[in-house]
Length: 137
Image 1 (cartoon, rainbow, N blue to C red):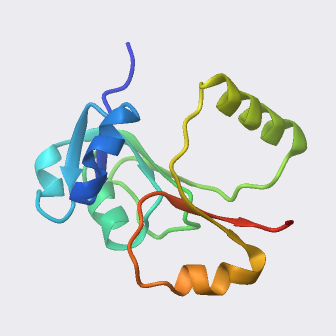
Image 2 (image 1 turned 120 degrees about the vertical axis):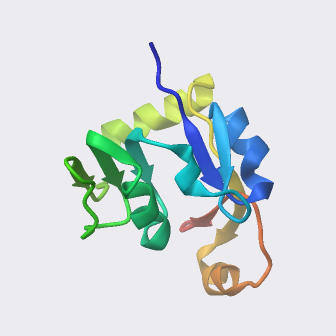
């Protein structure tokens, strides 16, 4: 059996999360995260207060996996895993192939040049998707 996935984010992200395979969505601006109940795994890409609140939902023996760096947050009777991604040519090639095959979907909102990176990240406009900085022209 597969995982039951609960996505979280802003209301505008609801459909995107469901399209990416979430079974349920919690609008962090309007819903109560804590009403979700106990979960076996939290995959955290936000950190901060949301990470702390999410960790509190983990059942005994569950896991908190975070990509935002080392954390002091620990689920009760559970395990925390944090990691840093290092580039690996073979793995990057596999990711590219999965994207080409349609097995991996992305949500890219804006692509900017390295020269425009500061302005891009300092922009006050809210945009959907991730920002990609193109290092080479």
